[in-house]
Image 1: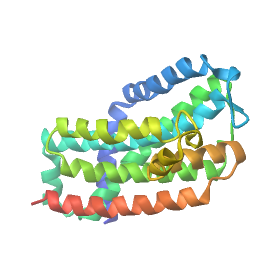
Image 2 (image 1 turned 180 degrees about the vertical axis):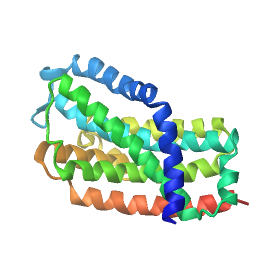
Image 3 (image 1 turned 60 degrees about the vertical axis):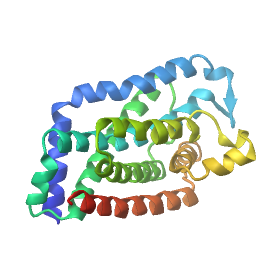
Image 4 (image 1 turned 90 degrees about the vertical axis):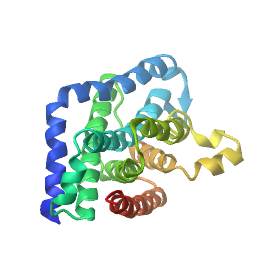
Length: 246
């Protein structure tokens, strides 16, 4: 299984290496626009929980971008399935479902970590320095990446076209990116909305990452929920891969 997982991961890393500088630039565009639009617009003039809005925004962007980049592995899987028929070759190879899912999930986590480093670099340019060096900061980042990489593999096995993939993004990923505590604290919303947003994984990722960045310790309850959600999505992804072979 380790060799099979390594082969899948190695393929994705080779693709990442070929597109590295283009992907790095694309990873920086959206966070930079958010920092320019919201950071300079509100910046030091707006305080949230005792921190400037820019300081509040950076951990939220880390949570959001780690989600979108980890989930972005779904697009790579779809391209390999629909155009290159790589998935059929994996079926013929001695690679089991667990190894395939694990390799793709690790690739999504790698993309996610690179994007987080880009955001932290942008934050340094904007003069924001928070608790990024603690393991408690990187643990929820890892768990958030694991959740959405696993979700990406499962969704990629279910969709039948790129339009289906775009529909999933529009109805799940994009709303979550804006409503998961990224740009504003959800405790300022009505109680009913808070209860609904409680079920979004990104809400707990934002809370844990922001807590680690501000207070140097993550919310363990949120980390536990992320770990359980990631494990559930991982096993669902294995089931979806098995069904996609039929």
